[in-house]
Length: 463
Picture 1 (cartoon, rainbow, N blue to C red):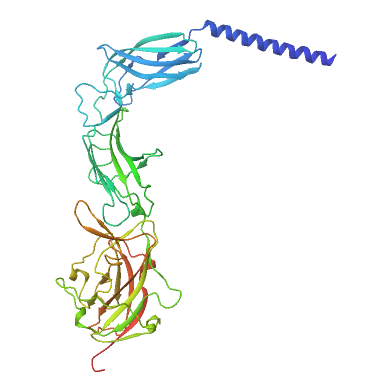
Picture 2: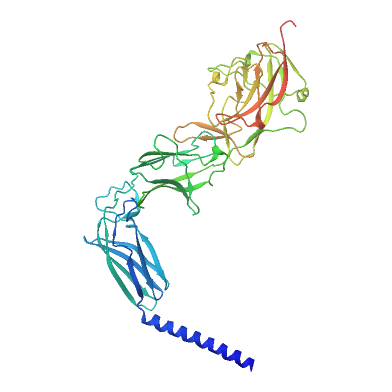
């Protein structure tokens, strides 16, 4: 008997469910496709003052349908707020601020810009919500809304310049960064970003902090190095769309774009190679010969690198005043990008009071050179040499200037050597001399600082 009771109860529940579903189906059949539609209020003033800037449009569908919401103005203009969007049977709400997909007016001067979103003109509008069901039924609901006191001027970007459009963020001092100038005509939220050609997340650029505050009207500057100066890896080499985008308080949006290319990007790394046997920096004493003397007008002969096996020891080097201190070391580029260097060439001999500028080889931002320093030198690493010469380095000709630039390729090693004529006995004798690898106007990394320090004793004449 108990089992029969359960079966009866189950039958009653199933029957009720069937009746409910059937009733709902009958009700749905009897309901119009657009059950209801309308704005929360019929007048909006979209000027970002916080009062009546937005109206809520609500509607309900009784079945799945493709929906469009269009506003027809009194002057014959029509604007689509939603166009052919698929919606299932449900209730919907959307905020309307008078801003629709971008459109262009006859008197617009856009300077090549794209209007992405725009406020419709002040007017009295008839709105039309149309719905087409999956069975082909078409229904339309209409009403009125007034747009008044709208903040209509677009946040235009009349100035937008990018230079260079091909840059190589690798800290070699040549086209390491691109500069973007944007003039914002109206206070708006300004964003500048890169879009990869193959798609992906935008890469946002930071604005320089100048006399114009962020998002204020005026000229805004962006200086982009790919993040390399902050020890970040730059974006992959390739072509990008650079976008400047302004969005005002109402929601109007204007966009300017250009194409930029990143090439040879990467963080450069190099070091003076530590040696497991013998010293890292080889020092040797040699007699001075006049053939080594160099001037800006006439470079002397180069000196040969150290060859004496005793130079591999760490003992004090004793040098008669007027003779030369010769050194040699090995540099490796262990990064993924070539590193730039410049003269004078290995083997160049300096006198104590000469500098690279004596030979016309002034410091160059981004270039790498080996430097020699001593305790009594008046500047840091006053004597400097290139990481090779024309025969051992890759030569790149700048098509715009015709200048030759010299690069040590990724993964390559090079032996650098040179000499300094020790002509002055300073207060400290003996003194210490050492080598360094200098990334000019960037850094002398700790691993490349004060390498191979050796005690140098000068022997005065007649001693």
